[in-house]
Every structure is written in structure tokens, then in C-alpha cells.
Image (cartoon, rainbow, N blue to C red; front, side, top):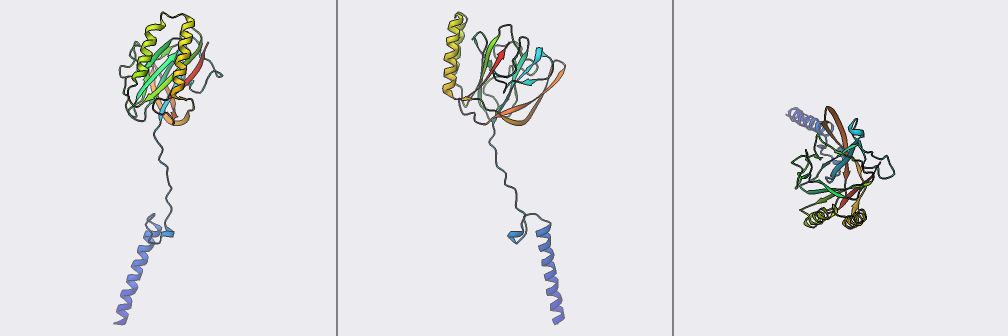
Length: 242
């Protein structure tokens, strides 16, 4: 009788030992002894950011190169170069993109309602995670013969910015009749208004790659992140047009 009981006890001990080995050595984080569990790697949740890149092609040919970080001290763009903007919003937002050219005229690049062959879907509000091509996936803007300093302003808002829209509408009705000196004053006022919103210049590396076709050429570019684009803030890029 004692031998039978001993056999049963030994069998139970072997079963428990087998379960212990299985849990501690084959099933991660399942060991009854806490100190023997494999520590799990703690991953930080990153907040989705607005992604963008400003791209150009020399004389409309070759690779798409970024002038997002070029600034006024870097390589200048020249007459005949083509350029476009690609962005991806982190949520449903309103995006406004304006350009002041070398003659100090201000143009709205996004929404692209006034450009021939522009993407008709380039309108507000923009959709979360969708990639937008400005002016269109298969089209680019082209630099004219007027040379000088050019600036692009990208503004991100949570809702329609009626003040900004009215400000631009007023400028549109006036600038064609303005003298060069008056347009220069308008440019300074516009930049001051943008500066008061909060200028953002710093871009961070991002792994988001965009591929598209333009003409018969396959093009590719990586977007940058704008991690501190608050409601109403402005990302500004300057470049030289020679």
C-alpha cells in the first residue's frame, strides 16, 4: 500500500516538475516564479506626426530631390526646374499651403483649386493617413523666369481658418494692381502674421517612402516628420530661385 502511495506521489511530483519546466523555459512570461520570467521590452507609443517633403527636379528631369532642408544657404533652384509638395496628415485636418514668389506675389498652392491639371481631390478637410500630391501626382509646378527669394508656408489647423482665408482673399484682389514696393510691404506683413502663429522649421527623419510616376519616369521620395505642428502653426521653407 505504501509503495502504491509513493508511486502516485512521485508521479504527481514529476508531472508538476514537467509543467514547471514547460512554463519557465518554453513559454515566455508564464513562469510561476516571477524572477524567472523574461522581461518584456517596453515600447513607447509615438504620437502620429504630420509628414511632408518639398521636392524638385532639375529642368523637370532626373530624380526627385528635396529642398526641405536646403534653405537660402544651400543649392538654389533655377528657372525651368519643376517642384511639388507631398504630405500625409496624422488625422482629419485642414491644410493651407501658400507661396510667395520672387516678385512678392502670394499664391495658394493648397487647396489647389485654381491650377490647371491640379488634383481635384486636393481640398479640405484632408483625410488621415492619405498621401496628397501638390499640385497632382503626375504634375508639378514649374519655376518661371523671375528670380529671387521664394518662400513656402504650410499651415495645419483643426478646423477651417476663416481669418486666414479672408486674409488671402483680400491680398488676391489687391496684388495685381500693386506696385513692386507695395507688394514688398504686403510680403512683410504676411510673414509677420505667419510668425505670430508660430513658425516651425525643424524636420525629423521618417521612414515613410512615397512612389509615383511622372511622365514615364518612376520617382521615389522619403517624407520628413513635423512633430510639433500645433493648431495654426506654420512650417516655412525658403529657397533661392536663380
